[in-house]
Length: 587
Image 1: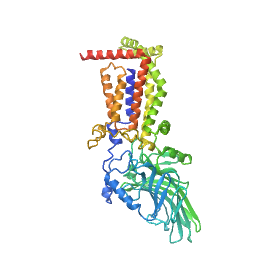
Image 2: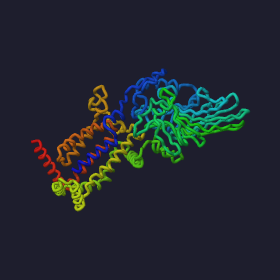
Image 3: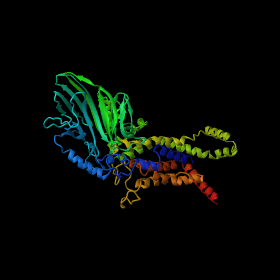
Image 4: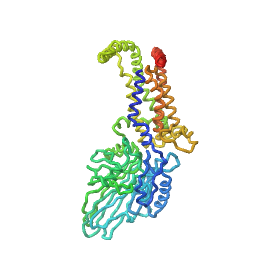
């Protein structure tokens, strides 16, 4: 009885933590092939309400994907582009405007297919997936470079980790502007904006750094995982505002000193990290689903013969936890918190680090999840033994409890007092059986967050048909495992893993004594199959964890029954009594 109550408690609490059933299925795992509006020059079409973003983000409609490929081919063929070739990033700089608008992440593939090429981070202006960074100046009465300016690059220039590149442009009054780009082995570029006044009069200029992106490729923004504008201001990380907030306000000014700011998706982000001279920052909506993140430096006077320089770092790439932590250790405040771990990050990050270590040892993230489950259950085995002993003791004193209940059936307060005195005299803790459940819930939630957030888990295969542990099981029973040409709705997306989960939970419940209450018995009969539907659209890795945990629980119960045969006999007797009671009630 106590064990069933503990399982019910676990299921209810887990469901509360992981959000509701049908709403969660539709909200967190929308159909990936749902069409989005085709990119067009018509404002009316651009203003059409886009389809709900997918969990990972990116272009979803075939029309957008085809248009993106076509536009990229044209844009990247323009003359004079400066190639970027570094271990973490590849791409090019556009000499028109000096814009960084072509970046791909070398360590991550575009799709689950290994031959799909590197994942694209930045795309040029005008493409369906546009996202880029630009650096410039503003100044009254000064001819400054703009988006149409053609910058001059050294012959054969190529941005690598060992060779920075400087682009220059001189206006008609002899003022020379320069953009110097450097890149490291991961995802960080350093851009130095400098102005040398070769004219006869002083000028006043304000350096500006800017990110530009569309929300067409945004990942899903949810209550527990933020996607959209974010930053750290005066060493306090802010996951917000979202795109809708910026659209309504047009301009959102950021309070406090900007440590870093930009746009984040579930796996990728682009962030500006200004130097100490930054004055203000904001987020802006340009309309048609386009947004800006701005950093404005203090206005400064540049006398003839003098040079003004400001340095901004640009992060554009995957949110790899170890990489972000290294940048934080190098002096960027709270950069590791750009991953939205939430309130329980002090528990989630150790789970993540342990998973990474197990993956390094096993070479397979599915095996790493199984090994993690073994470790967790192994650590909790002494607790499970105490739980089992407590259950046995509770079974032993049940006749005494029933006698007290009969004796004080008209006085609930006296009944509770007498039962608590009995527990104290017999040295029985009725809550001891709940401890393993409460220990597993944070582990389950931590694994859920790790599977959802960590780019290290993205596109990681397990065995056979499971090609991506961070995505739901693709083998759906309703469409005969893909033989029928349709995708079932999320609430009918029952896969093989979900069925195995239901079966293992059913077998686990069968080892427990049947509850005497017929309503409870019916609840236990349907709960495994209800959980099969609830969990079907969650990450495959999460189901692998739960299935493994169920199998270990079954093995553990069988072992403990072998060590405590009297407990097995009590359970069998309780089950027989429950059946007889149910038969009497039915008669």
